[in-house]
Length: 153
Length: 350
Image 1 (cartoon, rainbow over the protein chains, first blue to last red):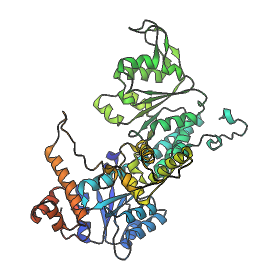
Image 2 (spheres, rainbow over the protein chains, first blue to last red):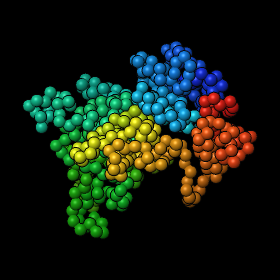
Image 3 (cartoon, helix red, strand yellow):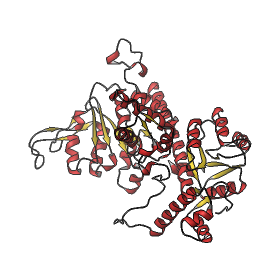
């Protein structure tokens, strides 16, 4: 499943108001074989996500103008983006933020400082979920095809 | 399709049947919602199903649900764990044997396939089945004829086969450990169960379900989970999946005198500073050996992470905490794989 995800080159959006962090994370993800989209603010994330296909969003919580929670709410309220998994970057011990993140529909958290291996694991887990959902859809359509051909006999 | 037990009110819809799929396969994650849909559809067919998923994801629950929702529900559901039965006994267990077929075969014995006649045979851990037996299973799936060990006569059996594996059978096929023809024969409908860490949003729903069960069993107690403890339960990677979560909740209820299950009673490895899938530092050297450099990097990374957490991301203080010079600490930070420091950090590194 994960092999399929890698084959089609999954696209990860990195959202953080710190340009250096965005560059570092994006460069690392590209080295790992992902395509990346970079956004420096919540509004920019919402604009770009409407223009290009994104598989997973890596979202910083603390941003001026529009914080991570507001971005999650906006993404979840739009049927076109509601199912995109969001990994929120927070301080490890920030129980309040994590609790709120769970409530608004974040798929996972990544603690700061961000470790290469953790980042890769978290993203891979979300891509695997997408692959699982796709394989269930395939199985459902296989049953429909089998039923149709049985019906024609 | 008829529904024998509810013939009068049956309209051919699973919703009319007393069995509630969402009461045994709990969750609202899109993969779970789709899975319930797939189970209901596949139950109305006779297709062979291959269920794949890590241990504890509920493969047998799914197999039973397919059986109960199928027209075979009034016949037996026979589970067989191919890994739990010694290889040399598995054939006679599955197909039965005649008296004197082998040493110790004192009488005729019906096999599990025959027991599942009219019903469903669930072959768990099918990847563990020896190659010779795989060939025999393939033949049975093709012609439905069982040949007991020591018998030259076969007889017809009508059992639906549902197989399950926690390893990727596709890889076993490439390795030559699993027959390719059998693989394609059993995975007519493949069903993948997501591990719990890939559908964390279901953790609070599952926790509430297990607490509800506990309240029913112990009417005197009204057990709940604190917000903070829930965050930790949510953040943990659950290598043993739903089964591990269920066991954990049971254990916490027993251990706690308080009705509110809170962080202090959670095991240390569960509290999110220590996610099991991330830090794998072996406590002893096994025959398999290890990559010492990788383990050292892992340990360094873990402690550096803890130091940064404790000092709120202050690198100078973190270096001091670890007895390192700031420059050494910075070099280690790079080497152990920190790619984005804590907020306010001023040292972007690759």
